[in-house]
Image (spheres, rainbow, N blue to C red):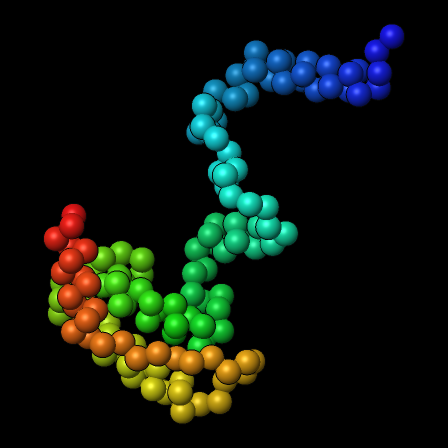
Amino acid sequence: MSTWHERFASGIDKHVRDAEKDGAFEDNPLVGKPLPGDSQPYREDWWITQKVAQERVGAHALPLPLALRREAQDLRKGLIEDRLAASEAVLRAAIADYDVRSDAARRTPQPGPSVVIPRVDADEAVEAWRQARDAK
């Protein structure tokens, strides 16, 4: 005699086999690939990360001081909007814009816990950009 679990599993298997016969999985882009995030440890807020990536919210979901810290981190690597800057002039202009916005944020009280908003050295960022560009 079979257990409830075996009967339930065989029912699911039958539905999957029927769907395969009907071609329900033919256009699945994940066929033969591991599930996304399968190698990462489980996080209870996985759905938030997935939703932010899906909606392409990016830094706009962060409070201003944290968004500025993230932007400074990218600028130091020569990145603008997660891509390598097109030229040195573009990178320097982005750093100048960041400096104006970060100075204004430092002078304005921000809600939440205190967060240090860093400065970005343009010459160091340009050097990192050159190294990343040459590595390509």
